[in-house]
Length: 231
Image 1 (tube, rainbow, N blue to C red):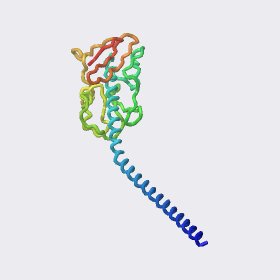
Image 2 (image 1 turned 60 degrees about the vertical axis):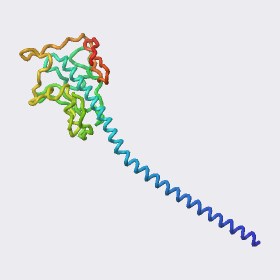
Image 3 (image 1 turned 180 degrees about the vertical axis):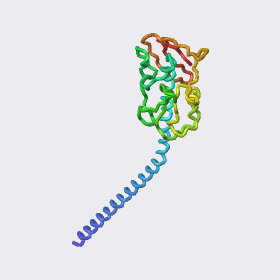
Image 4 (image 1 turned 120 degrees about the vertical axis):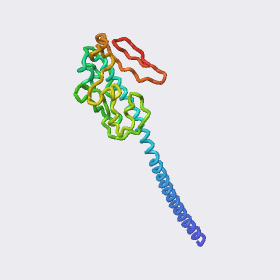
């Protein structure tokens, strides 16, 4: 009888010890989870700013590419103007389908989305005396990360304090709109200030804007249905 009682006491003691071990094990697991969570939070706090900067740089590169497309489209549109009044588009949609000719003519494939605002609502620039669109820019007021090493057609962007100051003209700003808003004569101006007429395209021809040049590559542009290669 005494032996059975002793065995029961030992069994109870073993069960109590097992419960204590389980409780201690659960406690260590909980502490481990807290430590892991703290490490992950710290890592995210370090990585998040780096990711944000990388994302901003990608968007800046996209904005510069899209702006270059607008620049080439505005320049192409101006070349086929027959007078000062119709050298520049009244709206950006005119670059997608030129209203000056009966056939379909495109200088821009589509109205791109501004990567800084995720909207197609671009700000446009017109000469002080009025007229068509001579420049396009984002409406974002954020400060750019990129401050230097711009291509020649975008040199005016150096040192700007917000993306809205990155204005994409069809040519450098000093030539597009000089002080006072008076446009300077373009290539092809004859003696006496008369503008020589541009080459007449074939009816129904489509003008595609030149693709951005890659290192060592070429871009093709079709004018009047005749492919041309530029370097």
